[in-house]
Every structure is written in C-alpha cells, then in structure tokens.
Image (cartoon, rainbow, N blue to C red; front, side, top):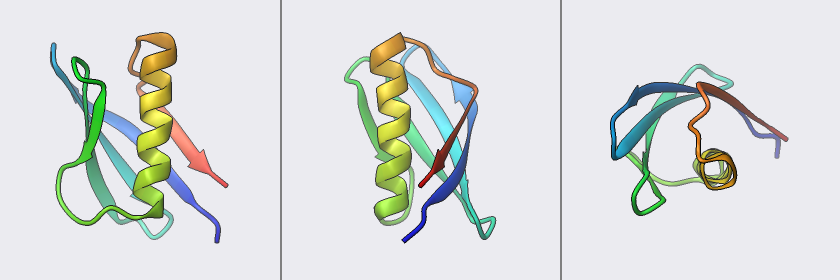
Length: 76
C-alpha cells in the first residue's frame, strides 16, 4: 500500500505546533505536536497508517533538530 501526504505547518505557539496534512485525494486533517511533552496527536478523526507515518515524520524532525519545519512530505 502506497502512502503519500503533503504536510504543512499552519500554527505555532510556545507549546504547540499544528500541522495540516493532505492525502493524495485532497482530504485534509490536522495533527498537533506538543513541544513540551514531545507527543503527537490527531485533532479529530481516527488514527490510521497515514496518520502514523505523518506523526513519525513530524516527531523525528522535532526531536532530531529541535525545529518545526514549515513543510514535509511522506511518500512510500
């Protein structure tokens, strides 16, 4: 099964970063990264393989670099 998502930062505060990710069909969802606890959660909806891939990409970028990239891409 192929995965594809365009990930875009939509909001950042001192504690939280919100990312919108859009799948290949154009359906968008919002993921939230808590900078303090380094936890990632889905704002609404059910977790699935695409969410897990996006969450992993965002979390790894944050933990490795301590920065929140403006854009990321998941493709496999």
